[in-house]
Length: 227
Image 1 (cartoon, rainbow, N blue to C red):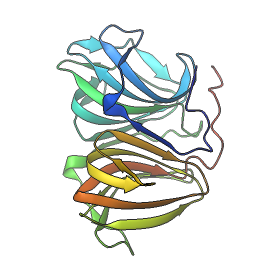
Image 2 (cartoon, rainbow, N blue to C red; image 1 turned 45 degrees about the horizontal axis):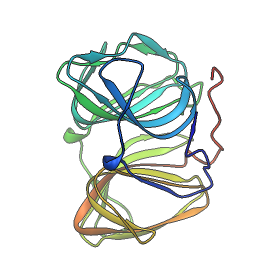
Image 3 (tube, rainbow, N blue to C red; image 1 turned 90 degrees about the vertical axis):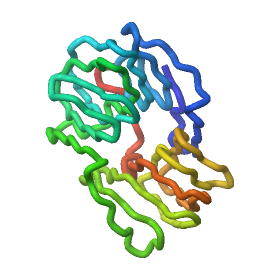
């Protein structure tokens, strides 16, 4: 399966208007944003767990990264309420479920194969800090390594930024709105910009808060070795 696999193009999806696609597990549905591969795939998705639904125990050979958008996600490591940011590195294993239901934004098979670093953050308990040289822009670091920089950003109404992207960019709007490429991106909008692009954007009249990752598209994505 191939979905939005031309990583040289700008892609915008207003995911709130997309249909849910059933997964192989009853009660778990997906909105696929980009994907290379079948059920074993390099994938970016929004996944919805109905109350009481679960996946079978499995190992994340290529790693898993997710942000809980609503509800409470649960696995062997505990309960993760809305706002939780989690990185389960390659070779990690768990049995995901949600007793009361939840929605997560999740990325699979996008880690350095040698990465063994777990990350578990509750963003509601973390602080924002000013972004140097960008008035009205605040950042909350989530993870950074040689491959990528992951954070949450909060922009005041009308705040602007103009950034070069040698390694590309991906973002998901969590609250408010952002103007980019002449297009308004509201809550649940997903944007991907290729390496070498420029991110020139302005916050809407109510400001904006979004999850963002940059640098990870410097190397052209490939399907999983097991795919």
